[in-house]
Image (cartoon, rainbow, N blue to C red; front, top):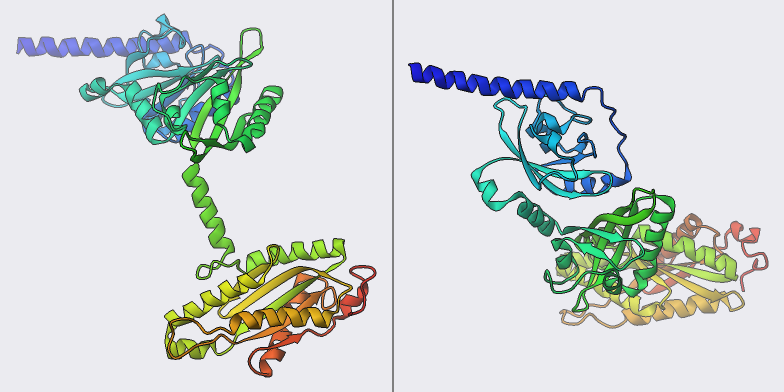
Length: 459
């Protein structure tokens, strides 16, 4: 019993010593002024806090917390939601012996959470305004692996790396992850600004230069997306974020930041944009893209004093094709119609599918001095000729028939809605006359309000 009492007494003394030490640090630094957070210097912190699950701290020169992520708050003091402006010495007993810049790469401390777990504080990087620390619970396995190694691996798998550049010189530092981002093995090349610039896609080099100069001149955060070339010629997209650092004389002498591979994000964005603007089955532009294109076509025609033809194309007997041949053949008919209409159009024209068995063509650059009747006849003949050939490998033989409604800017309307309505009505007129017929819209009264100034009568 005597030995047990001595052990318990010793534990009590240790606990009281820890508590007294913490109270002493709080008292010594309670009235110390807390500096403002420099917004630009937190760029690296914000990026890393989104990619790692461990605790992350940003600490100023005097040892006060500028920022922390949620994991750090849970490890250091889960009873306090915001640790900003707290002194790091509350957790690291001998922190007063060092500054954040001269502190050892790794230090140890105690959590203020219930249970007083041991923590490791690993210095990741520092600049003239702050030092970043990784905070993790201390365990044997963690000691063996090492926090720095974990940090490097997290950068590698997240495809994000840190860099710093001595402004105006060729001196450039890359973290290990950046080698892989640029398509190299670590140590395969020696980083320099000249080498980096040579790997930027030639079409994006001026963009990168302009972004750097803007950050230096205005103090804005450097944030730019650009392409790089891998050694094998592969094009990759990266996003580079950083800011300048000033020396003791207030002069800009360094830029620091992070770079991240966003190639997959760019591909996903492109795919989403395509899905939003194109028909899934045929790959043609949809109604949204049609209206955007038509608006621009009308503006160009108004400036150039030319015509724009809008052709509504409705496939005849399409329901019967689905019923008699099946939906798989029906889909083949739609895809074939899309392909053949695409072959009719010129490079600057548009073919869109706006639903079911309905397609629309926009043809630009029709000269106003030419006969309107002759122009509409030639357009219709081209479409019907493309549709006249039977679909291959379908028995019994199947041929596409269609009805066309044609509206012309400016004769039949001066805006999108008027032209679409006029072409739609004309198409129904053609449909009433049977297969492979076309109809030209009636002249709109709007056409005589001089959309072109000198183009008021139908040729």
